Image (cartoon, rainbow, N blue to C red; front, side):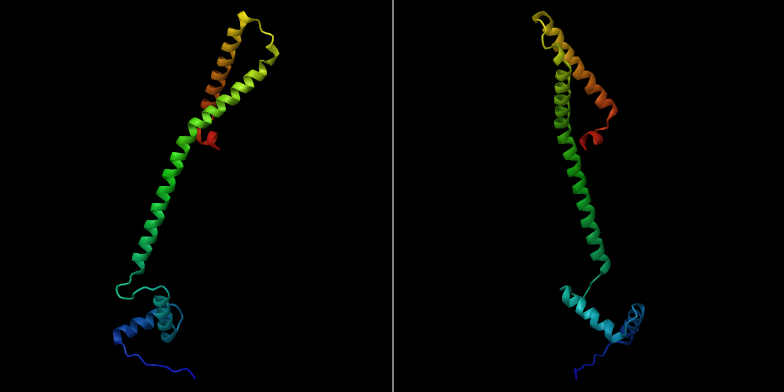
Amino acid sequence: MKETKQLKIDAVVDEQLQTAARHFALSKKAFAEEAILFFSRNNISPKGYSPCREFDQVQLIRKSTDRIIGVLQQQEQESFAGLLAEILRSQIAVQALINLVVDYAVEPPRQDTVAQRVQDYIREHMRQLEANTPLEKRLE
């Protein structure tokens, strides 16, 4: 048989214990045991304990974490935007050169014209991309 102990508490505290135990559908004994185990397991002092304060700290940590993640995402987008533009320019240039392969036998006097056509082609397609595609979509 288990050894039991008795604990004397103030009548006001006993009423609070009864109310709390009833709220969680526990006996006063079961509620008191669980409360003691909770503080013991979590290495928390019951003196001055406020679950609201703990909740506020968790909320503060979550908000700070969300803010940090937001800043990192913004920096990531900004740093990759230039790189993405260069990749797009390269892709457009390659496509322009592929389209101009038919003109591979261009005489020297017309080579400047071909180079100008490639540059114009690249500029036009970059303008179209930037005008039609928001930065977020281009980063995907």
